[in-house]
Structures are given as C-alpha cells and as structure tokens.
Length: 489
Ligand code: GLN
Image (cartoon, rainbow, N blue to C red; front, side):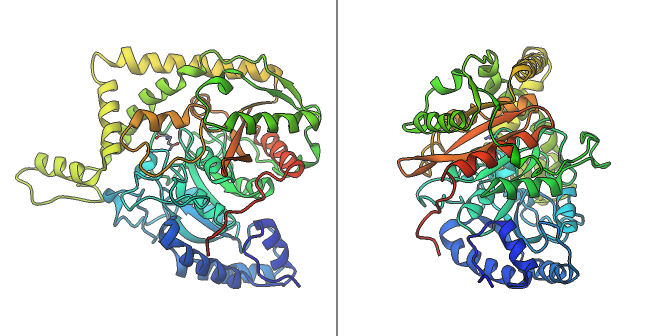
C-alpha cells in the first residue's frame, strides 16, 4: 500500500488510486493544502477552486469504485485562467475581466471533466497571454520555484510553476508564440504546443486566433500524452479543428530513438545563447545520437529568422480585432460615469487594460490601417507562407527538428520589463513553429548555473506522437527533468 506522495506523476497517482491506496478526495485535499502553503511564495493561481475540486473528486471516486481505468480519473489539474469555466471567474489576468464569470465551459474543460480530472484552480498568466514572464498579470507576478527571484516564463507561468513546484502533476496552458514551451523550459518541466487545429479553442479567451493553441504541461512524457489525448480532437464548435482521429499518444513509446532522423539547424545554436545553454543542448544531442538517432546539422530554415518580425505584425493585428469586444458595453469592466459614450469607452479601455496589452492593440491597429495593410500585414502573411513551406521541406528528410526552447534560462523579475524588445526575443525559437502551425514540445535537458534548460523538438503536422515518443525515450535515457526544486513547502 503506497502512501499519498504528491511528488509522483499523474499516471502513478492513477495506478495507486485504482489499487485503492488512497481516494481522489484525499489526493484533492492534499493537493489543495500544498497549493495553499506554496501560494504566498509562488503566486501561481488567480483563483483556487476548492469546492469544484471537492465535487469533482467525489465524482471521480464514484468512477474509480465502478472500475473506471481512464488515466485522468481523480487527477488534480491546474487550468490557465484564459480558459472559460462555468461559474468560476475567468480573468485572463486582466482588470477588464476581473469579475467575469462565464456561464459555459470551454471545450477543453468540458473534456477534462468528461475524463474525470479534478480542477483545483485557475492559474496566473501575462494579461491576455501577452508576455514571456507572467509579470504582466494585473494580479502580480508568479515566481519560479527554482529561484523565487526569477520569473517562471510566460505567458502560462502559473501553470508551469505549479507543476514544477509539485503543486499539481499536470496543467493546461496556451501557446500563441511560445507560452507553453518557454515557461516549461524555464521551470524544468515538459510542455507541448499541439498542431494548430488539433485542440479546440472554443471558450478560450482569444489573443491571436490563427496562432493560439491549448496544450499540456507535465513532468514526464506519459502524463503529457495522456492529457493531450483527453483534450484533443475535432470540435464542431471550432471550425478550425481538424477531423482527424486522435491516436493513443503513448502507443509508440516502445519506439525509442533508434533511426529517428533529427535535423539540427545550426542557426538556432549560434544566435545569442545564454551561458551554458549550448552546452546543455549539445549534451542532449549526444544522448540522442548515442541512442541511435541520426543527427543532421545541415538542415536550413533560412526564413525562420524573420518569424519574430512576422509574429509581431500578425499577432498584434489579430489581437487588436479580438480585443475590440472589451468596450464596457457587452461585458467586463465598465466606466459608466463619463460625459459621453465615447468618453466612457475610452476610459474603460484606458483603465481596464495594462500597458503591454495597449502596446499590442496600438501596434495591430497601426499595421491594419489603410495604406499600411499591404506594407505590413499582407507582407507578413506572405512571409508566413514561405516559413511554413521551409518547415514542410525540412520534414521531407527529418522526423523532428531540434533546437533550444529559449535562448536563456530564467531571468530576474524586472530584468526585461522596461525593454519590450528584449522580452520579445525570448520567443525567437518558439515563434517560428506557431507561424507554421507545426507541433512542438519542450523537454528539460539539464541545468545551466542551477537553472533548468529546455530542448525543443518540432514535428510534422499532427505528428505529436513522434514528439512524445522521443521525449519519453530521452527522459528514460537521462536524469534530466527528475530533479525537483528545493525549499518549497
Ligand atoms: N511571448 C509571446 C507574446 O508575448 C507569446 C505569448 C503567447 O504564446 N501567448 O506574444
């Protein structure tokens, strides 16, 4: 009989609960207690959903008693506060939605519930998912469990930090330009951005609709695979989801790394990497090679370097349109004592949005305005197509492409806050993949100066299974990702 140990992965909890070692309710109570104890230091959550968690845990216990062996039954999960939850406020970490309580669940939350998961809270993020450090939350920053003076990355920083701190075994984030992979890397856990169209965006607060995807965080590949399996698949309420079958993402785990054709584009290893990052990546490449993978360093993605520029036209343009709905009339924060409707609207937006969100709205409105549309937006869309084709041709000869996830390890709170461009550079390696729509995973691959380094594997459209099989094999071949941060309750 195993005792209740919060440090084990979700699949281990599932096995122990099925064996009758402890109940989902007991796991939920222990999880809530740990989260409450960690919150003063970490601030990973905007809202802790104690009552919901208890009700879902009791329902999970009924399913366990009935012999339900689905992998997420009774498993505690944190959900980014960008995902609409019925009856639970959904803030996007913005004053604008501080008191917004949705009357419906987004599709992925519905699917989590159908899978038997237990939602313990809504995690902190950069306001409307704009940022790379979680410092742009209107409710204060989340801290990195490896070093509380440093950021956890972002925008899904709360979801990454709570998994790294062993608060919950798994969580959900969203990734528009790197917001799952970069915080996964900075917190030393796994995070996967699915192929665009793999997971429903219905009920997810929109940032840049042609780039946004929901995806899983976990501490091993099996947990990430099971969580992806639960949320993926066609949804008639999101016409951009693709009706292709969802495989069992753990089915290929026996494959290992032998014969895996890995492209390593040199250009991603040359550009401004922080100390120790290249070394950690090179060591990981050696592990791949030792396990039988075929490494090819001649792969070229010549236009990928333009992806950051393309992103900062397309993402703000889409954001400026998506965020037009926060006008003080429909829902959310509203100033109602102005001299005119126009004055009220501009006060509402002036006070409801933080500075980074305003910066994006201005950038996007400018790029879409008459006379500039062709020069910026249309041009960016053309370059987007070129980047997508370059990835396609790289995948003719490679199964995966390997890069660092982020140029640096976790930086100090405040370090990049006054310099938006320095903040944007965090996503140099992750953004090309949102532009192309391909899936990608960040895997912990060691440490530089005591801080986690992440390795990114990019795959073909809808081939998350290969990424997960490779992540699993790499995880089994090394100790990377098994250490845990010290000194948290
Ligand atoms: N850091 C990038 C941005 O600020 C990406 C954010 C995201 O993926 N949501 O836009």
